[in-house]
Image (tube, rainbow over all chains, first blue to last red):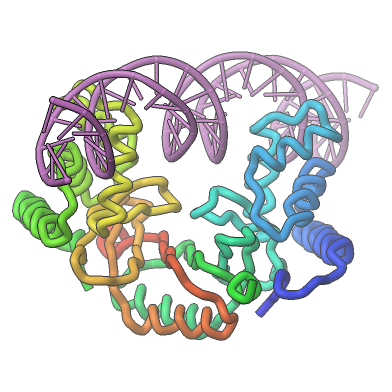
Length: 157
Length: 157
DNA sequence: TATCGGTTGTTATGTTGTATCATCGCCCGA
DNA sequence: TCGGGCGATGATACAACATAACAACCGATA
């Protein structure tokens, strides 16, 4: 399980690692991590909170004046297709993927108090999902598991 | 587990039951199922597919000319608060709750081919969710579980 | 009958996401 | 070297989803 939020950490390092991994994965896959896409990925990673597309746009526009909504949505779509970010449906917002490169299903713990989202990977949970769908004869394409509440730190405070 | 979609059924009866139950629950709870709210509930129930708020608005406006977006969103908010409908976050759409009256967590199987959504109630899945959150010390307030794919019928066809 | 709270009316606006077509730049084959 | 094709980006417009803010109404009740 990743835990990006519970402890202070060197977030610049975090971002660098994510970008480096992204570059490697895109090279391997022979897809293009263009400057715009890379910049959008970096913007998303700068926050541990899911960020909205229009927030990304505002930031991107500082360095790229031609940026418009489609610019951002195209980059976000690309990054999602490559598994480099996830969309949090219940927030209409996007989050860097801490498990890029591993095939995995994403499950999120979203704190309503501090706004952070933590990606968890839980095999038992995944197995339970599979069992439930199998029973219905349902062919799964995408799983959205988003748990909202209060994180440990916010419960303390 | 409910199964609203796999078989043909008397959908009028379905709707009637839902409305009757809703009236009873609202009476018990001393909250008002006003004509607008009841009409919106009926509109949502007329489809087994999740319906968007503006689709509800279009339908509602046929019998209620003053209807505007806030009219619909207020009714939807009320119905969600009473557990009579659910919002499908990944579709920005709403679905009648087949388990109104029982406290339950909602989990959905959403067919991308035919558009129907089936609400499932699966204790094992729920337990796995609880275990995962407990491990993180996370206090759950809301669980969103939405599985998209292809339903059994659409796989056959 | 005065007023209080909950519901609805009304207007406007905010937020999120797409459609469409033009243009650019690069690679590759003739 | 030319030019055709294709993926990426530019640019404009619009569609879809949701809320803010304040006014008006209406029934219950002191």
